[in-house]
Length: 186
Image (tube, rainbow, N blue to C red; front, side, top):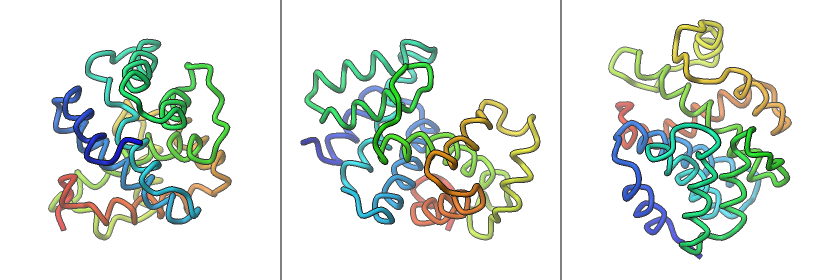
């Protein structure tokens, strides 16, 4: 089993961009919080969150991402449930999201990035005080964080069996726990 330090080593080997590393940490934090909520294996879920886009700089376009990344992870002995979740987080991979971890990773990916972007435009680049209403308002603004797929955000909440407000509030709370580490102030 790979541990968090090993996952971080893989991430930093393949990901040079500070913003992508912060995204990985944000998704890791959201997955950590959901693992606690659902009584799942926290370490496994955190690693899945951290590694889901580790190959994005090498292969930014489908279908190479995350397929090529999955090959690298499997070759390095990363557990198959993590490799599968990484594959399943991309709709075009053809891998159905079957486990709760698969669905959580899909749900956390786009929303964690979007919440992070919402916090970055606040005074002090702070997530503290960010509201669900503010995030939902920005979701309607197609020009804001335009690379975030809104359909994925909405579908992710549905796949977790949560209403959007609950999911957004949960992710905000998860990112507050790691705010200084991902550049969101205190």
